[in-house]
Image 1 (tube, each protein chain N blue to C red):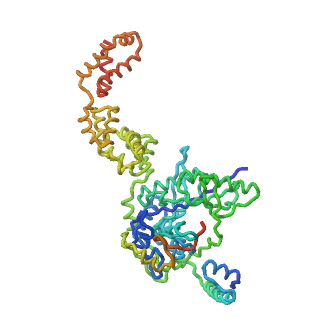
Image 2 (cartoon, chains in turn orange, blue):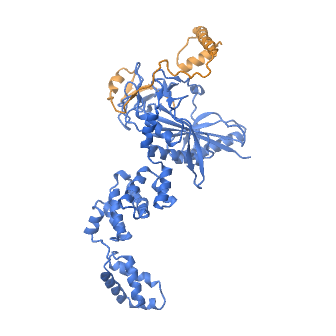
Image 3 (cartoon, rainbow over the protein chains, first blue to last red):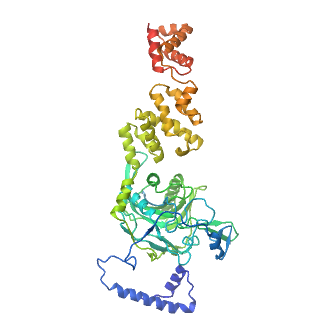
Length: 95
Length: 478
């Protein structure tokens, strides 16, 4: 299976990863190789096999419903690109 | 040619947990911005989520109430999209293996007909933060306090065929989650959010393209928005156009829906199992632990009120409208030894409820408790006071003047049941109204009402009306 320029542009936009114009062919080739690997794996008979949700053979543990965290917004906002009035600031979002 | 309407609802119910679904930050509403958003909620690199145990029992409880298949093994997935109020770049949710599977909910329509609505699934997920505008011009402020709050998204089958059915279902689910105590149901604070998927088609044809109505926070507006959207879609198709799959917002002032204009590619969420969380296992013991603490559900309670207390369907429905009211009523009935449940129902649904509404209070902070109301009703039952005097006693209790017994005592409101005293009153009234007595004897029987009124007035409303009638009749016939 091979991906073209259009697909690479679409995927990079979804992932918010910039792909330079002259890198597109190379990225397309790499992604196509990965998809080829999946095509190969699809040949395996998986009838009756439960899909694996996690590589570890373990189950989720829980924490009790207790508040354990304190207000750390000043520390967290000290490393944010921009903050004002205790809010993180980002470029305007149009709703 | 007619049109068929197809509606499915997605309801986000915020679970009543003290801490977030994956972190130990508080979920209390209304805190200072970002004061309840820890590094996990802020999506800091390297932070790992740990699931809050409380969400398990609450999900099982809803599953049991909806007679649903439980996801004994459920899996968390990542739903990938970029939006500034979701700092990780994905929402942790459940896709292929939700914690609650296919279930059902019976609704009742205004005309009394019943309909069973399928519930496709309910899955656990985390809420996003909030965008705030106007702090710095040209920029958006982000408050992550809501980020990571536990939600159950309850998805219905596309089983509803009118705005009224959709609202009946939404209200029923709203009542249910509050009865179960798994969600506080506060729509203004966003604890219970309803998104409606609406489409139209010609009878017998495949499903039409749907539009999703979002962010509507009252049942009244949900109904109006769906109705307007149905009209709009029919108009689009009848004038030769096509309905586009999109999210639409309802403008209650103009009474229209309008497109939110999101890019369609935003719907390519690329779900995959979350590597930070392991499969969640529900054991039979977990289910049993919930089953033993399951509260009685509204429908069962309603039926029991009718059969055990001989109440009308209407009274039973009003009393079971909220779990708090139902429990208040049952407490009053128990404290009065179930001697007159109908009277308890009347006081709970009229006098007591009217006072709550008038003063904008809830049952928990009302000045009259179940014990106090029961104390007063006991005095009506044992004939110490009449129903009319009871209103006076109730008002005094509401004003904080004490218990019913204290008020009856201090105001001297005890009903006169002494035959001699009532007889004296009757004699007085008859002696002072010779003309009316003549008229009565001449056949004007309606004078009876006049005499009773005069006697009750003379007694300050305290004479026992039954005894007055009996003695008066005897005297007049003599």
